[in-house]
Image (cartoon, rainbow, N blue to C red; front, side, top):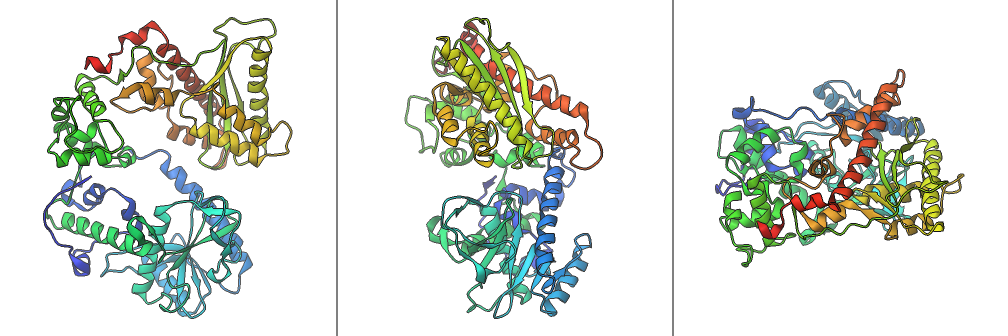
Length: 570
């Protein structure tokens, strides 16, 4: 999105009440243009993207996680526990929550807070915790990680979800999760509006807790602490963001001028309004189609509004304004490539890619943060196979027990034994070895994470051994190669780049999000019988991913790369 300078003042709490605008906490981390479209009756029939196939899956996983946490905490505190029916209408849930508050319940599960009509707020908390001195603080239950190894976090045991029990945790540091903090602030404001917040002089007055994916502790946050940019507290950051989103929503709901115009940002990939915004951006050749985020904003301040305007500029000159994160010459070349329909442009005549006598392409499949259920490999012998070599081709090391499971240890150990065996055999015979992946962040995370989680189990390597594998020059991240030596007008994902090398996936629905849906059926996460056809589909998808990786590196080191235009030619 991008701002429009309308000079419209903030409508204040009265405008939200009069217009009926009611926002939940998600708007504080959401594109402002989406907030506008969500509340503009004039675009009610505008085209929208098809539902994200993984969204319902993520919601179901989150519900299961919340239910498990609620059962554990509720069983430990039956005398304090009050449960609000989770499937009742919002109004009935709010009434049930009010009854529990009036009764002084110590812990209220599935709480729905009364709608703050003056402030334009709505929302609920997984848990409300009554604190000494009166009033309640919110606790969220989320299905993502909220800490990392380290120190500095304040935690209490899961079964002691009280801010007074929080202590310095020497083994954990807080993982930055702005959406959690801003939701806690949103609920804190709602508790205040309902008259349910602790008195200001109570120690826990501006605090909230979060139970993460590990589900073993509550991480407590001081919402008055000044750790946001500019020294702002979470409450101050929330107040500024929420006031802005109310302004945008009220203007949209009342037919006022749009306070945010479309601009391509990362969030666009999963926004239901992207077809509407994309059509408008393409119609005007908006500059954000080539450069996103802060760079597009900076160019607009210099009246560079379209791709054509950017393409017409001299890349050897100084930029009209400083551009964060991207060289000005690159932005001009990208604009010219976009206008010519080119997906990739070379920076250099010859692309340097590590090649070896024995090569292995690797692709890991994980199910969210629950676990890595498959390690796929594609073995090649460019230097020629020798007697005793592993046969060339694809194979997968998988577990079909729903993750997380200890069977992951078996599949990971088999993968690790195989790939290091291939490496060691190559070296023993005087040949070079290289292994390739596309964007090593995911593979490295699960390589190290698996070694840590399953330490001591058969075949599991020491973490230091895994780290040495990752640090070696023979572990090659082809995404880094693409990022350094190519300019990509339509994105750098494997499924964007591999077609330039002539590769196509067999499954027209191939993609990370869809694969998670297939996995649910493959292991019968939702009950019933595991679907063998979906297992086959996942294996073929993984085989195509490693095939795409091989095709990409072979293309980059073949004469065909000369057909890709050089940046200097544009």
